[in-house]
Length: 268
Image (cartoon, rainbow, N blue to C red; front, side, top):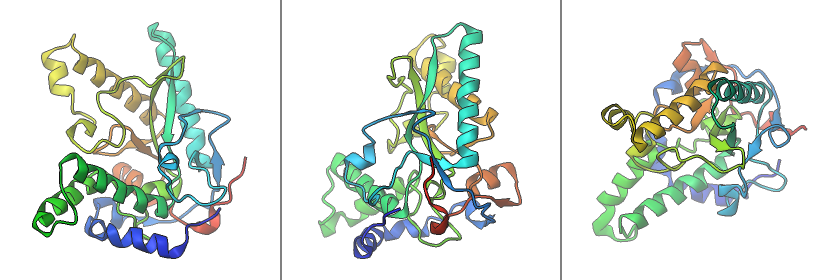
């Protein structure tokens, strides 16, 4: 796979330097990579295009495809799709599918998107990042972004989850391919991204929209966990299998997927 020009990556990493200090509890988990290659999702699942990060100009490199995962992870994702079809059919619900928002993500793209998220959040709050009087506000934005975006670390001991080919961002889509309203956009920086954000309102108003959003998030969580995935604690859309977060969550001895650039030879 192609790679970004080194100096561009260095600039991205320098801008997002504060995120390197954001250690996760699962970073202590050892990695013993099983050696599986990346496999494309395109022929088997619905990939939501145009890809959002590619559209922003994220530096994937020539020939790189974000819609791929490790072979074993892809197999489990296909199993989750089967679970979803079975549940909706049994309950007499409208047919639903998994819609893949993002999958494999090199560190160069992670750094690019971290910086993009910081810039977007500063703009939303009316913060001028170049104003020395607003540095504290900028640091607060960076800390908030770091709750959702993994540090773009080049350390092979603590790889960003998506860089391992073990993590996927996804949602539910209807038979026409339109995403369902899940009560919060993918990649949103804020409390609406927390998986259980709507639970209290759902209890208080079981016939309201919050209850609908919560039930949809629960359905996504159900089919993914049935297939062996774990969900990110801060993101309703992010699931992984075999990475450090997964190993930490299920109390496995070690992760089976890490970031080894030599393994990423895309196969059909």
